[in-house]
Image (cartoon, rainbow, N blue to C red; front, side, top):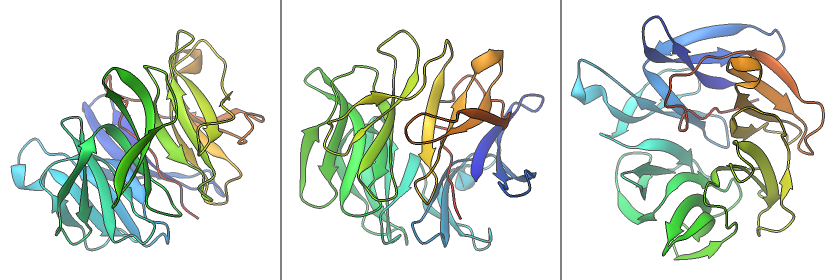
Amino acid sequence: MLYSNANLDAGQWELWEYNFASGEKKFLYAWRTQVAISKDGQQIAFQQLSLTNRDDIGIWIMNNDYSNPHRVLPGGLYPSFSPGGDRLAVMGNMEIYIVNSDSSGLRFLGPGEYPAWSPTDNRIAFRNCFGGDCGIWITDADAGGRTRLTTGGSDGQPAWSPNGQKITFISEEEGNFEIYVMNADGSGRKRLTNRPASDGLPVWSPDGNWIAWRSDDGGSWGIWVMRPDGSNQRRLFDAPVLPVWFFEKMAWRQ
C-alpha cells in the first residue's frame, strides 16, 4: 500500500509504502501525496508539491518501481486512472478534468470533487452540488450526463470496488465522518464504521476482500482495515496527518 504520512516535525507530507506481508513501513519521497495506481499496477500517479520550484508542482506519473517520474499537469489534485491507464481524471478549483497520461488532450469534464474512475468502464464517481442537490454523482467520461447516487450534503470521497459493483464513500450525516458502502446504482446504502471519530479516505484491496481507511479513533490518526461488510475492523499502524487531510488518499496494490 502507498499512503501519505505527515512529518509533523518538518511540517510536510511524505509518501510511504506499507508491506502487508512483513508489516514493514518504508519512506519513499517527501512532498509526494494523493497517490493512485493504474489497474494493471504498472503506473503510479501522484501530486508533487514543492516550496522551492514551481516547475515541480503538479500531477506526475512514475513507473511501479518508482522510475521515470514525469509531470502530466502543472497543477491539479486527486488523480484517478482510467481502466486502461492511458487517461487520468483530476480535480482543480472544484472542477474535474480528463487528461491523457502523456499530458495531451486536457479537457473539462464538469464541476465536482473527488473524481474516482471505475476500474471496469467509463463511469466516474464524484461529489458535487448541482443546484443545491449535493451528494455523490456518476458521469460518463466521454458521453457526459450525470446521475445522482446519494443526497447527503457531506457525502464525498467515493472509491470503487475492483469489480465496479460497489462504491464506498464518507458522510457526516450523523455528526462525524463515517465510512459507508452502496451499490454502484446508489441502492443498498450501509454504514460500515460507527465510532466517535473521523473516518475517511477508504480504498479497496485489489482482490476486493478488504477496505483500508484513515481514522483518528483513540485520539491519534492511523490506518485501519476491515471487511467490505464492516466486520473485522482493526488498526494497522499510526499515520499522522496535517490539518488538511481530505485529499490524502491511499492506493493499494498487489
